[in-house]
Length: 170
Image 1 (tube, rainbow, N blue to C red):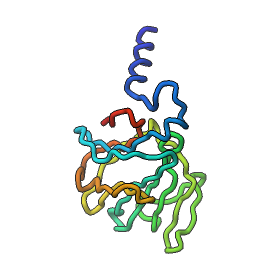
Image 2: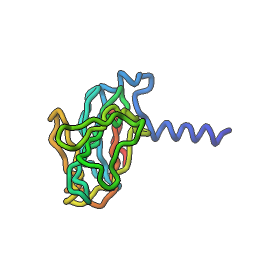
Image 3: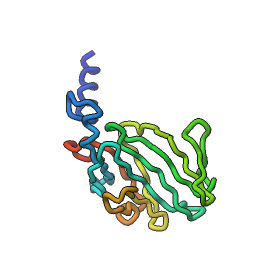
């Protein structure tokens, strides 16, 4: 029993998502998007308002077109909201029951209403080469885009939505 209590204490210490006693809705107004390398370098550290949105954009390495995975701060939870793909190319496509596929009017398509929470508000991405140019973009233009490939090509980075009082973790 004692080891279980220590494990719970360790998990709480390592994975704080909000102030103690704060509801997810109140925490969502004080969230930040951070991108951190395995070495601890912070590539992105930007405030994300409640219901704020950002995308990870890159050039498909085989077909050489732009792909977008778009996220939002849904009451303090990082959610994959939608994805844009100009083609059903290698590794891309719509999975039935996961969002709604609609035409983008230019030969490609959006998968809207995916609305999947990202586990632990973070995921790891192996950043592509400068030709792939993984970057963080802000659809509303509230922040400048950041090329992850320019700073961390070939490296693993952690993309995370964190409470503003917390330090970005690698």
